[in-house]
Image (cartoon, rainbow, N blue to C red; front, top):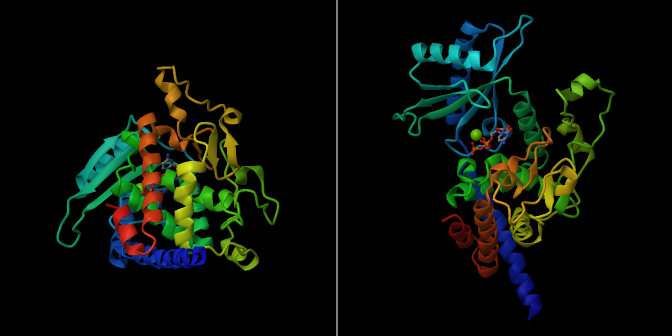
Length: 357
Ligand code: CTP
Ligand code: MG
């Protein structure tokens, strides 16, 4: 009868939570890998200081936000704190690339003319480093450092549920080939924002508070709150917050993942709405991000199929890389995942394995 089925479902979800957790733990980078990456960062920082003595080289992206899978790329950002007028990002790319070419074993590829100028570094695999190292160095990308800190704060508030969900989605989206912004799908950063949106704004009671609307404890200056015109304020004292705020939501991570796939398969209104971790569910018309006209062939209109507002650069759609076909594929994958979870009510481990095939 129905109560037996409910019992089975409950059992499946509990098992799924445990399996997910075990699954994700094996994907984490080892302490050795983290140590090597930190050594690489220090080495590069020391070298860059030959070009620009007042510079710092900081990690952002997955190596700094708690969402790193094993052997993931390094994202580094060089900041220059100088009273003199510092060189432009493209000048730095040329000078630093030149130096690294002479002084290191990295293969160096400068991209000074890109929208965001960067240097791409790669180190071929060796016995001690079987996957080599891939690293991008950018310059003065302060917003990326801040959005990394925001994601890290969310991960710190509820490490088990947030990290498990984001890491699993990263792995799943890579295995299912829907994590390629250059090929019309979505970046890992985009998937992480979808998870946080879901936990802050979709789940009732919410799993996470909205850190961008909690007021500061002490008044802070407008300069401290902004980078350019972008408001970068968020409540970052997670230690204090953990003492004073506790989620009333006790769902296990298995149940949350099943609901996430269900929501983004059937419930989220892709045509008309925007995912915003700052503001919740927003209308495209409110943002001026119009629905693509089905008769139009103008590709610029194809930028707003999947709308995910960046937490700080709010005019920027993180989902702009997603094409019509890309969205169709992504939604198809969400539906496939929902189907697998519905059809394997007794085998959590098999469901996860099948999901990531
Ligand atoms: N980023 C951004 N805007 C984007 C994409 C990325 O600001 N449209 C910044 C974010 O700070 C993000 C970082 O670049 O944390 C790295 O993005 P991404 O490579 O997508 O995420 P990772 O977590 O590093 O995932 P992966 O392991 O797949 O590299
Ligand atoms: Mg990365």
